[in-house]
Length: 120
Image (cartoon, rainbow, N blue to C red):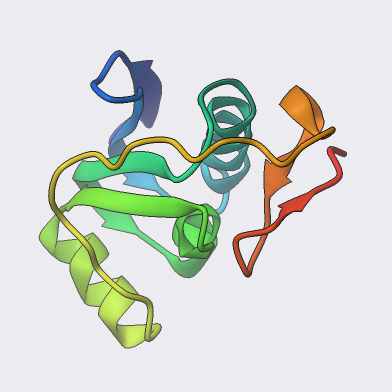
């Protein structure tokens, strides 16, 4: 087992959440929290780099299966799992942020369907 590392790297036009190591059920909540933080502070879609993930399970990738997240790099195990789950595997440049919904500010978080939802 390889230790999990999740960090927010500065990027243009917005930050990238980068993950390395083993991404399983224990790492999913950490990844979800950082994705939510970046969405609240920098807007969405949130760019996630999973190129350094060595092993993964469905619980680990659950946070990136929402429409407010774009996978900009994925290792072979991640690509295989996302394909098996029927999730799109997108790699490429980091997208620009979308403006937050009026009146929502930093309390909004992305939810399935791409609409902001209440924080919590």
